[in-house]
Length: 440
Image (cartoon, rainbow, N blue to C red; front, side):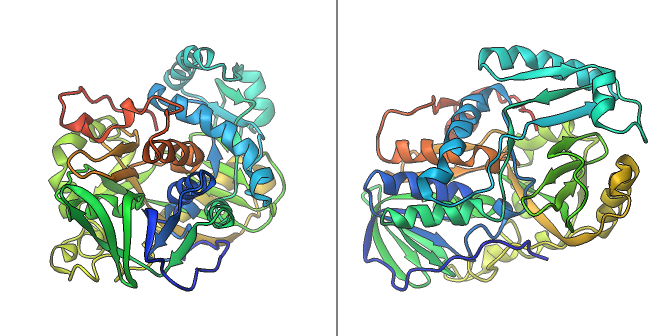
């Protein structure tokens, strides 16, 4: 079941030209459209399904700096500052609240890692502190585990996945951008080594710059241009409860992660548990992903599913007509795993007595597009002038989405970047850089 998302209207006609065409209407594409349109550039935002229909509406809604990889910290800090102002700028609520994040653990090794991360917190002036065993127990009932400690990240928080991308897109339209849903892009025109336009199922748009922000579809689109982008999609399951007693706003334990929504329901899942489905694309990029696979071996299951035969990484993409390659599947909507749903419910009910009667409203599957180092790509593409990529957010894209969009807009507009884009360059997999696997 696809999660319920705020629906917005499309513009009736495709523009003949635009300064920038953005492929992908998730939070990254919508945020980039917003920040480019605010600069006065003409922008066409293309989405083969509807705005926010894939991972941007299927995530936990966390907006955090806590435990981020050092390379992502500048983006995280920037994003939190941007989140603060978006509702007032656009005039609509995105559900962003600095509620704080609370973590608890009974694993001394994990606590030691969190303690070490306090050094990063001090470098970036992040307000966070370790919790004693007693303090953790005051927040989290000791029903399944006896806590050894935890973390309180007081200035982190959450936003509403059902609202964020659509509201950003509407904010972009208020500044002149056009929005085109049910409108897949399938090819670029490249003239003398530079982008000159985009072919879509509804017609051609001339453009001097194109951003691919296509999430799980980004590597497949890049492949049509001979661009190598190592990306693998990891399948996850989450659910949304019916409105329930308030046990906290944003909570993490080894058994479950909970985010309270505006209507009093909870998004619930189990952190770190996912399935890496073997696909032709994952086999193509098996070598760069091997260090991550080894590091996450205990958390990630491996199997063959429908994605081998259908979807952006599948064998079917090899022989699909190019006009249909990205439009045959309007919404990538994998089935949720029934066993995983049962495990989530069992863990939540056992961990929080107040939620013993909690009921499921909806459940969904999702594909999280990941890179070999779990750090996004935000980069111009060498050899194709005017072509940019912002993808591979590795499960972090919602919280840092505004920052990714802001940086992508700066690169496209040739402005001075607010953060150093070097760690996010696509060429790090081909220029001899030693790849370090980042934090989840």
